[in-house]
Image 1: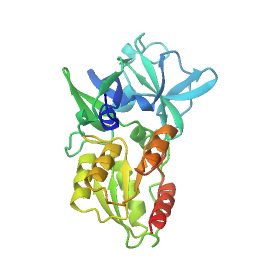
Image 2 (image 1 turned 45 degrees about the vertical axis):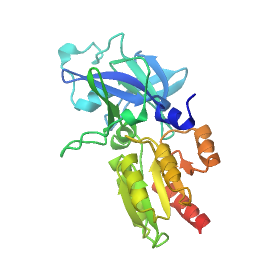
Image 3 (image 1 turned 90 degrees about the horizontal axis):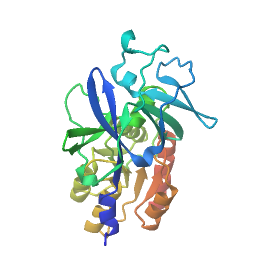
Image 4 (image 1 turned 90 degrees about the vertical axis):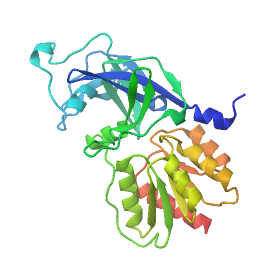
Length: 301
């Protein structure tokens, strides 16, 4: 019988998909918790997008869903006219539109084909390659199978960097967190920078960790923090498992944790609070982050 801990370690359920870009067959995947629906391709309603990101609108029984063509986004180039159909696009009967619910928005991603859902252990998720010049915010992690590596695409980064979703990167300065020490465990450079800047602008000392394994090591070495802010989805050890292991090693600790995720899951949020692991934010903005941090630190005092 699987324990709750073992279930969590095996809780990485993915939807693999392929994108053809510049003659290459790129292998990606996405966490199924972010997937609302998957549709076979059908013609999109043209959409005037000044950003040049949205290919068109998908009509889901009267609900318009903006669709981003990942092939175009990855290459930032137009396909040769000889490969295009009369309407200027290339389509096959294998194409799918993956509709994701991200940060309160429904957005579709046009891909060349999808595969069957797969279940992996969270420990199998590796961080992206750390090389100068690579955009490691586009790829959140990697899984290795018999065909090589498959990349976990960062749909939040696509939404933000393309301008489809605005995240506040500037915050007012102040002293509301002066003297407070906070550990920030986050694998996305974009969100890590945004959160750390907002916290430091209020006088907090911020110690950053790039994934759950790194965060657990820092906490076990020195847990003199006023608060821990933890992403749920991370390589090696996810945020929930990281906090469970920390509390198992140091049961006397009263350090509060604030989890954050792009997914809205009220059942998960309730379970986290019932297990007394911490609170959870479904959407991270600097304003909401700061207010929640102040409330949690005040409650602890």
